[in-house]
View (cartoon, rainbow, N blue to C red):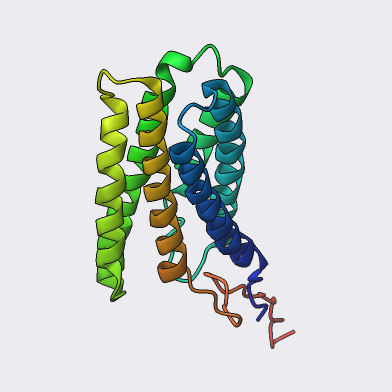
Length: 202
């Protein structure tokens, strides 16, 4: 029986880790440089979201062992690719909705991770509570971005930075704790070759 290739799973897991660290780094940048151009933020986040969306699609179709981290990444991957394209191509036209759009995207990711935490508990993954805690933490910042208070753009950029740090930590924790790569993993179905048996009377 032909074993399933683990290459897509490795690409997805490594990509998840790299993108999570990149989100964490961007969060630190936005906090330390709150006066950075919002147009620049839109461009860089647009690129990051497009890349992360592609990684999520790879993860969804990789069919890892537990099927936890990537189970919702088909829909969400497409969503953030579209959002990334809009932010990259037309940052100046969506400036008023920029922070709310990022808040909705991160809130959606947090809700998916909330469900993954509950599923992880059923699978017996001991660190499911960490996923749950980080999901709640990220969702809290996302809600503030959505219902952004009447504050300066610099404060909102810093808040976005905190939200990206929370999102990066959440996705990194999920990738490390729930994506298990088994080298000798069989496909979900067994291919059976059928042969016509000749009638013994012939």
